[in-house]
Length: 108
Image 1 (tube, rainbow, N blue to C red):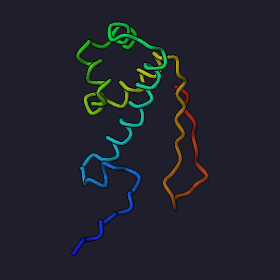
Image 2 (cartoon, helix red, strand yellow; image 1 turned 60 degrees about the vertical axis):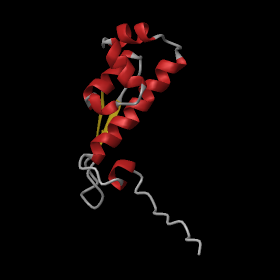
Image 3 (cartoon, rainbow, N blue to C red; image 1 turned 90 degrees about the vertical axis):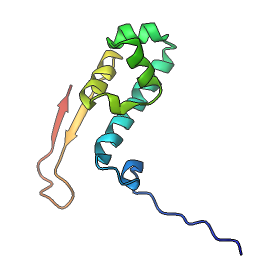
């Protein structure tokens, strides 16, 4: 008898779906890191140029380009975006169900 494949609906965060303890942090790092890689690839930069621009070692460039974003803090990844001439804006608002009147925007 052939078993039917079992599918689970994703939560939208693969790290949470895998049950990892720091899933939200890993998800955020991944989203930021992917943007950094896209921008670097658009510029056709060589590893040495990436190293100089982002002010990181060649081994860190290798980690970044392999998607090993857990090796970088969110702050460092955001700094990479700034060095790649991106404007960063954070929107802060209460979680769902909380008082929605307070919303703040921060440009970095």
